Structures are given as structure tokens and as C-alpha cells.
Length: 138
Image (cartoon, rainbow, N blue to C red; front, side, top):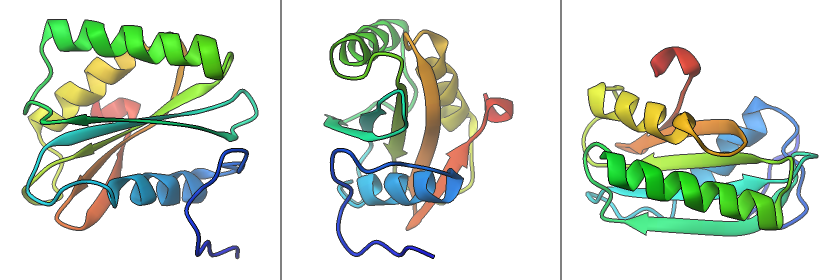
């Protein structure tokens, strides 16, 4: 078992769901406790870390149409420029317990709506726990 002691670096391959969860947990470490934020990153077509990370501070409890459209455009543009054929990883940091709720499901649907590519994972980070959101959670 490979236990990382350093942060992920560009070119690191995410080979399975355990490493994907580890990447999400590493991204969640940058979240501000008690605040709502969203962190986006991208993997290339070979599931390697591209090195582009976009933090979105003060994320609303649930996404609205305008924000969803803006995020979709951003995700597509980064995919086109830095990771053609790649995928997106999103981590929603929020206060409260780690139970998945309606607002988390709304974010999951919004992030998967029109990302311009494959969504490799959407995660919720709350109360010290990072949990994946699946297609079924949408």
C-alpha cells in the first residue's frame, strides 16, 4: 500500500477510487472550517493530476442557474486547455455533519449537468469526513 506523505503533484496518477478519495481529502484540507467552499481540479485523459486547482470561496448552500452555467463554462475551458479528454474532481466543503443532504445532492446534479467532460468524482467534506457523492446521489 502506497501511503503518500507529500501532496499530490502534477503528473501523479490516480489509479483507483482509494487514491481518488485521498486526492479529495487532500483538497479538502484547504477548506476553511465552518465555511462553504468548492474546490475543483482536473485529471488528464490518463488520470494524471494536471496541477490546476480552482478554489471557489463562499459557495452558496445550493447552486443557482447562473452559478451552474458559470462553473460549467469554467470546467469545459480548463478541460479544453489543460486536460483534453480528461475529467473533473470537485470537493464541496461545508459546515455541519457529514450526512448527505438535499443541498449536497443539488451540488452533485449541478456539477454533473454540463461539465464538458467526464466527472471523475464529486465529494463532500464536512465535520472532518470526506464522502463521495455518486450518480445515485444526484
